[in-house]
Image 1: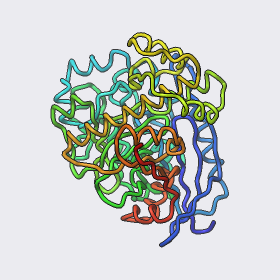
Image 2: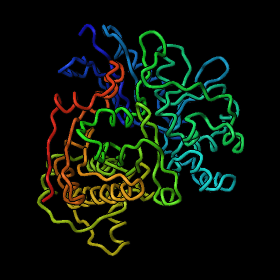
Image 3: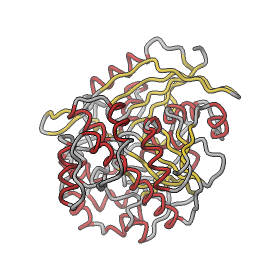
Image 4: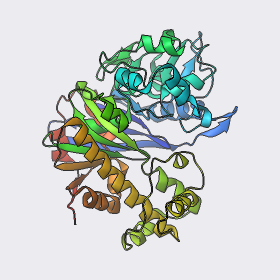
Length: 435
């Protein structure tokens, strides 16, 4: 595929390399490599296997004839390099328990209102800020590289930080778009390890190009919206639910609602709230050892009986998710799901309700009204979830493209300034009207 672009797309459980071509009236995309990984406990923490990740990316790209390569991944996790440029330890996964108590510790030094006013970021214990406060290696490191920047470093030897992903760390000033050195100083985090920022579309080295390296930034760039009155749900292991704005919202009400202002491609603001997402279903399927589709068909025939808060802290770590869901329903006095289909229905009803509540809050807090909801990513294949979301939101849902993240990655590499009409015209989109 001469003249093509390669998208390295790393999710929180699997990665793949997609090869694509961007033309005036056509987007072509195919998968050339896929690999799975899970964090494992090593050296006292839940860690990613950096050597495996590096090898998988390098082997997947080997021999490809491409114009450029772009890298996106999940947010907040990072690797620390020593003075010789070597990784000091395997990166710790955001699901590790080391951040327990770190939020309170930080807020003792920087009150929540002030922290939010500086960064505009939803206060979550998984954020890079709280990970660094808990990380004993942070004081010794020469460089901090977020996961897509670490992969770019392996490929090019260049050190930097792409802006959209850096914006998720809770260490960037939301008003200036630069690292907040004053905040770093107050928290005792060495400012010298933070690399220069890169903007999407800039060259890194060789044929590697910075894209919206936070996977949600790339996904939102490829939302096939035809007007600006849309809400989006980037639905995968996590669901990122919100609206696109021109400027951040850092009001006290926005803080109380736990909304975040993340950087988007082209200087936009992704005003959103994290919802736990299909992690609940994925972990349940893993525990049961059952196939997804028969359970979804069975769940579709059931009525709504109970809902949980998908963002409750007990649902964050790996483990026996079905038992936790049953316990949460019992503790709240609701109907207790008795079998896997009922648990699946509870998960999907809970997600749809959380999506509705989040989009209502986003409109109220930002003043931006929406009349359609776009679901992109792997979750748009889940017809039951899409229909339940349309029903809950009382708005039409447009589901697709599945490969929004990879497409957004490719579109930045190709320098397409307004990609949404092209995506809408060339990708399969399915409509769900509220029933």
